[in-house]
Image (cartoon, rainbow, N blue to C red; front, side):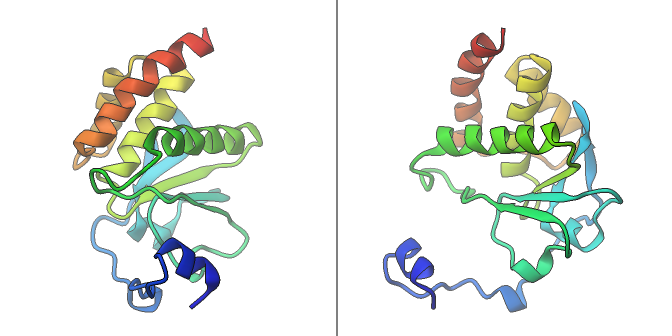
Length: 172
C-alpha cells in the first residue's frame, strides 16, 4: 500500500482491486451535445474509445492499465454518494476548467464516471452551460438526451444550481 493510499483512507487499506474491476453497462460513448470534441460515457467505454480521443477525464477510480497508451489521463476524486464530497463545488468547477483547458489545447476528451449516470451528466451539464451560456436545467436536459439513463444525484443537481448563476455572470 502506498503512502498516498494510506492518507486518502485514513490509514486503512484500499479495498478497491483494480485487477478484478468489472464494468457493466453500455460501452458506446456519446458525443456531448454542446461540443463534438467531448465524448461522454461510463468506464466500460474505455475498452473502445472513439478514434481521436487523446485525453480521458475519469470521475471514478480506474487502473492506469485501463487507459490506452499515449492518452493523457486526469483522475478526479468525485464520489457519487450524497455528503461524501467535502468540496463538491470546487471539484466540479475545477474538473470543468480542466476539460476546458484540454479542449483549448485541441484535445478530444472522453469524460466518464463508472456508469455515466450521475457524475458524468452533472460535469457535462456544467461544462455545456459554461460553453454555450444556456441555463443549467437546459444543459442538463440536453446531456440527458444523449445519456438516457442519466440521473445525477440530488447533491450534484443542487451544486449545479449553485454554480451556474455565478458562472453565467463571470462569462458575460
